[in-house]
Image (cartoon, rainbow over all chains, first blue to last red; front, side, top):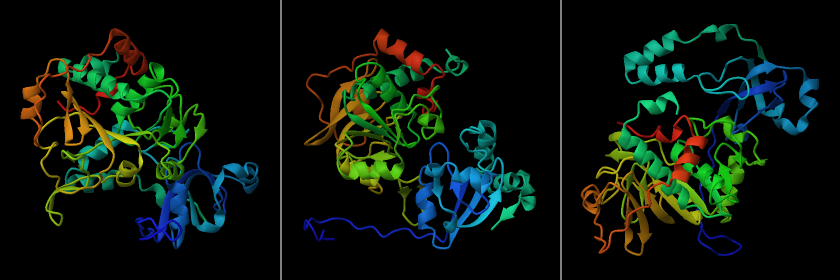
Length: 138
Length: 250
């Protein structure tokens, strides 16, 4: 496309518009005002792109006053968030800085088992299903 | 030396160290340098350059930081450890904006297939609708390669499946300057990729034999400088666990 200012030929790429963004954070208040510590990759952009909203899992749900004490760290506003799930260890076997690193043993198990359909089923059946009891707010 | 190193074949240790120093020497002092995900060798090469000949280069980390001081070399090159002690946070959207305004001097990128003109395939092998192999995709490569001042591609294998006459799909292309493999250093010239130097212990015949596209046979074959004792010492200090060897299959 032609740049209306410089007349230069440029590419235009349509924006991705996912329905939902599912992201895991270190800390959120019950309204979904949330903080990502460490690196955030594209998580913040994903929260903006999601058309229906964000489903947030968090290491812990804290009081609103704790989040409001450091607003410069709060990169996800609660108005974008549709559900908050308290799920300690929710990023595992990937890492969640500074709580835990990559679980290499579990990653290797995943990599090995998911080479086949049967292995994938075995992996899924053996993973923790305790999420049914997790607290959900909003 | 960590326990992982004890079990490595000699040829892998030699190739890994040679590739790390060869990549590192391509970095100039004061440059802004980027590495992506799944890039252990470039990550080590950049830290080595900062430790030795290019102390003022700035590392733009795909993990979202600038000039981190990790306490150990992580296996994943997007590990949060790569934000530890950073001079500044610099998240991925900032990074892509910097690429777009021409602010990055050098980027290290991988490729599953590469042709003489520097077109790189990271998408699929075979029929697009029934691919033989579905590759991981180019990440940001398609916008990085045309916008960065120069791209260096590396891969820990050198064979005719990698260096092909024609890529199955051109995921990314642009300003390629060098290619580093376990046996040679290539430079992109007006004719395309040509041999710049052959690593010690390898021959120009071996390079030509294992390259799927046409190469000009150099009249005088330059040999890549072997890692110096100082470079090897610095590598050992920087990466005692041997993260730089993790990409090798043997």
